[in-house]
Image 1 (cartoon, rainbow, N blue to C red):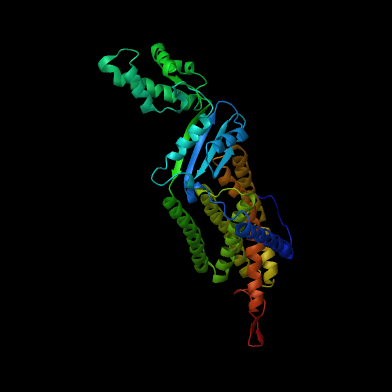
Image 2: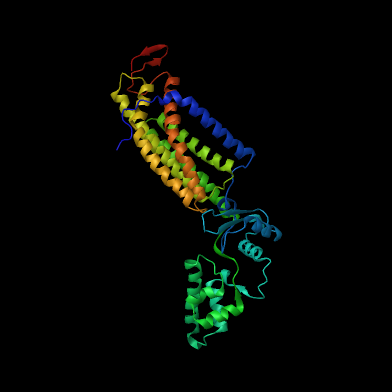
Length: 397
């Protein structure tokens, strides 16, 4: 399938505009990383606690921020899920608010802060009670007088109640009676005596220690550098060294602008973002290799054309393929960005930025570098007709 046929766009004549554009974005990103937001590392890399909280209704972020402040918590960030009806909030607590020996203090501090102002009358919160605690309570209360069969039966009811809350109702009981489908009436009556329901439930907790965060940060940097080095070596053997250098510079350019955009937007870089960046390195490199391979084929076929003309023709010949693959991928990641929720927000944002940057860098960064290098050397790639300058004399290629 071809969208374009016999196009004759002079891409290289527009290289200075796109090079200037890249320079502006690169300098802005570097300035932000050095002097403004720096590199906004997520909990995965700096260490801390991330608590995913589900509310019974849309959470008031300002009110929750005030509750956490009054509880004495500092260095926290709130990230609301903007999807309609989600009612979820990610609360991220920096490692400085806990200690490596007691990392679970972060979750406990957040739960206590959210429960502040509620008088439970000595009752426990059913929305934040786990399977084991609930089983122990039922065994102790023994509302069904089961005797020797109590552990198995109450364990089954506790599991049914927790599954109903987390899997069917999204993590929140609005009242104790909501648990009625999962257990007999005496069990529900016992729960009403000793439990209450808050307006939130903790769905998930991720805890990362400072040492693990430092290791992940180092491994993320090495993974990116190793991927670039491996592709340079591959292209060196597959084509020539200048092809590999041009492609790697283009990929480094894509990575720099993507990370710079995260810094400018003050959006945290997590492990999923690193995965997206590594995906983009391969995606951009693949697009560049397609263009380079067509250039190499045309050098052998179009011996009367200059290298600039060959590069332009090669880009035009692969333009339909580029638009189809990049366009369809872009539509997919845009849908992921708007519909994927907060957990995938950073991942999809990196893909959206990277696909745009990676597509144009293959055309306006990598290809012009190839031509500029040959012009600087005063020669062309083997097989092209332009003259090779050697010690003041010219020889036909």
